[in-house]
Length: 194
Image (cartoon, rainbow, N blue to C red):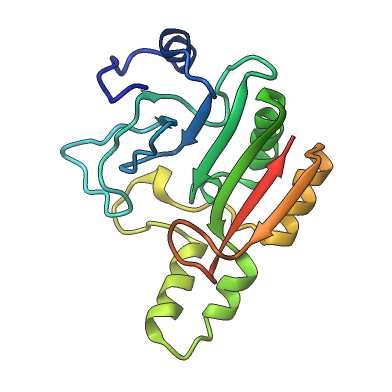
């Protein structure tokens, strides 16, 4: 699997054709976090002259827009993304989740981690100041570094997101608040099976 020695100009489809990963697993919006056995994809390379306190650089194998990956039907085994879906409007999210379902193989899964709107509302009233801060920032994202793509556009609740994924046609949708990234309890992990 690639270790960032692929030219950044190579498209995701070209990288897949060259690498032929089996199974094909995509880590979308990877930022500075490299996942083993995944193709790590981001839209925005790190800019040396830009302060971005939301992520630690960018370790993408290639650059692509997760809203329009342009991959064939039934070609992807797994999609994982962490704290990215809140950077899109609600309708962009629904279109994106629909496109991911199209690309997933039967039985393939989309796994998303993000802050849960309802949990954030509860944490706004938490006795610990740090937890109140962690909730508040999720409503608007990074507003201090002047990077538009780091701001938040929509904060999903777990029940709303699960309902929309079922409407799209995912066969099984499960929700957990025991996440692998960021803050368990505040955040959710949604797994949607095609």
